[in-house]
Image (cartoon, rainbow, N blue to C red; front, side, top):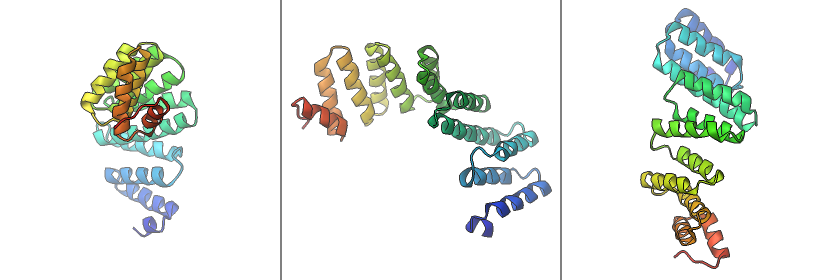
Length: 218
């Protein structure tokens, strides 16, 4: 506790490693040490992945170990994605799926990588898979609708966003994007009315666009 309080990571790591050597089946410490290294050090530190592999080697069927390892790999993938390292990000997101096949966030992120690469054919099934795994995952619906809008399929975007609104009726981004889809589809009245809903919900973007068009939203 002392080393944690003073953030003395080298000594804290040494103490935990000593404990693991003495009690190699105390998996709580593997998790605690991994989380400590992730949160207070370099996420790319190879010792972190080595630690997870040691944990899994000791307990290959440990669901928590798989989930924690997958979550860490996801963090790495996100780090690479934000840094524009799409190849590295894709490898990590797909590795996360191999560790936890129910990771709807990983599937969504794979879809985002392919979308960045302008590979719509591969992005779509990943967004669909994310939704299948978690039908309440709003971000995947927004991404899916975005793909439809980009590929001149406003009808599909409208259907996707209306479905999202049924699930998450206060999702401002859903209304903003639905307004765009209606406009793209030539349904200008619906576009304006939908934008007004977003404005009443507090969307600064919607209020700006309506004001510029001489519309009110009250």
